Image (cartoon, rainbow, N blue to C red):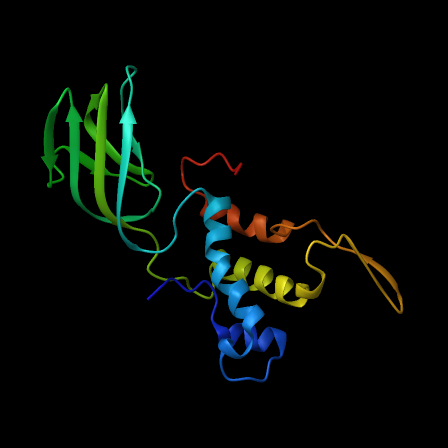
Length: 188
């Protein structure tokens, strides 16, 4: 099952919806499904917990820190190092350490290709978390504004309303700061 940032029950309460399932509100379903991608882009990390394969090339300067996109990492199946035509695969934590940002290799490498097969990401989001609150705000705002996508100003009987530019709300961004990847600069 894919990661759920906010439940339909919470959206239903906030938006005072009547139908039993989110499928009965196609625009809300689309917005909700796209929120993980929007948050991942902003946070500089992958959120959904699943097995992944990432490859990195290390040049002449060498390094021992490997930034992996899906943190926290729950397990590492293998680390394969290809250097000068020789391939070595590690499956035990004897040659690397799992860190908050990815992996730390015990020996710095140069001129290598490293392929890591691992499981990482969030297995769930609690109602108290900033991710949940940010998703609730952003999804509700986008759903209520679906008829004016991209409009900077909306006129009605009482006058006009200035709308923020298309993108994540300031409050959504503020709530997401605590969920940035540890090595992410905060600039998408």
